[in-house]
Image (cartoon, rainbow, N blue to C red; front, side, top):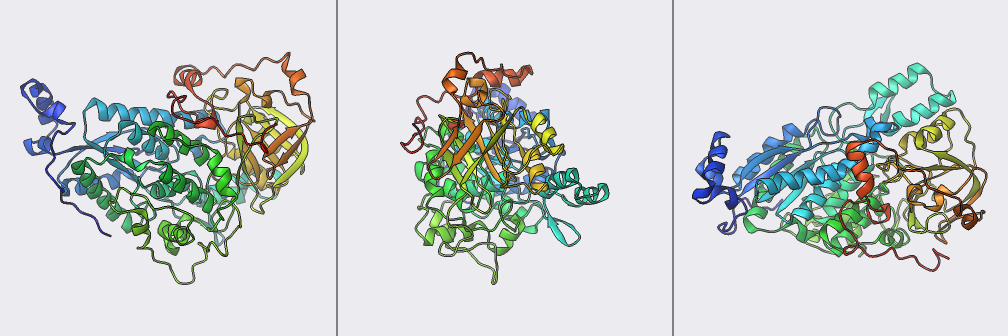
Length: 577
């Protein structure tokens, strides 16, 4: 891999001069000297190493070990590393409970904390170390907001667990809960799956949200291509960390802002990677948020366009057979990108490595006989599984993730639940049957608050053999591990007076993905006359603050001003009456 650890020109007018230059800054220098910084350290660009390390989950628990290679790369490149920590909320632990309300909110808090640490110390650049889901989009949002040099380093996937010769991921544990509730799995069998699924460090192993967003960052150019691919415990991971430190040092000396890599072209490339890899619907929430921070136009309509033209070329879980470790062994993100570039589906654009995307993809290597990455001519699925729907139930849009078989239509009676707990209890009690349309509302960004993921419920349905035979609609969202006929991000949400708050059990719901509609056989206007939305759950502190500030999921559920930044959703004629 080509990169340079030598500054291309002397650094002048550094941001950190604000704390290191001039007589008036003697107190600041005194504090820095007390922390061990030398004259040389203060003369060089000072680069934040933002670490989302935590000991609570496999996803981020190894990041403290990878910080030193990053620091070495920065020092080799003539920069001074300065360490900070930020938080992480682990979705796999929080899923299905009150703690899950903190997950999406943590994206904004992580972004804010990075901004405060970097601006508060007038630092010149940043390397942001990420693992579990929300740390990845938060890193991109922070780099866009700060408009400084920097890049994102992904800590990598977990290795598969194994039970009875079968590779496992956390998805299998959630689905085992459903099988156990159905009576198809004993207590001992569930215990065996639980104990085997997560063998050590690394983010959840399928093309779930973490791996989806890590791939998107490489296609966007904010992560060096290939740096995220090696599994967390592989020997290659430390080498990639050191390379990222050297590249960040060069960016710092050159003054190249990370924000410059976030363009309409690179955002589109990132969205294409999501569709082509069968990735998480959460990208439909995170890419608009990154665009909003960068001030770049980006509509969720892009996903609907792409899913009709871009095939799924990776056979990855949750809809496929393989895990992220298998993708790395097959040829990794470069192989996926090379397939798409050869077919003319993605466009060339700059990346933080200093090389354009296509030059990076030319370094691809494909393992003989690999079965993970197909070709555009002979894909896993001809079209992607993400659709943007409108209609009676979702005037501002909703996101459909179809079953692996690619079903595009569904009609059935609604079974309505206010909150995930009630829905999960009904699934566990076997009250949901094939043909039902499960509605879970008051789980949106404001109403939840925090827009919880519904993996516990979708996985329980899958464990009962109902994935694809039951439709699930929510103003909340879905984990990247969710599969089946699921529709999330329904906007406006119930707490904002959206029609999803008016639907009643027994109403017939019709979903037509080709026509881009969700319709209900009821008189919404009549029901709306006497309807008052339920107030958001009052949880105090940051939760209530978030509920007051958060925007619609249709524009990323951000807490910054968006009117001047984001286009209105394009409600096409076939999608709206």
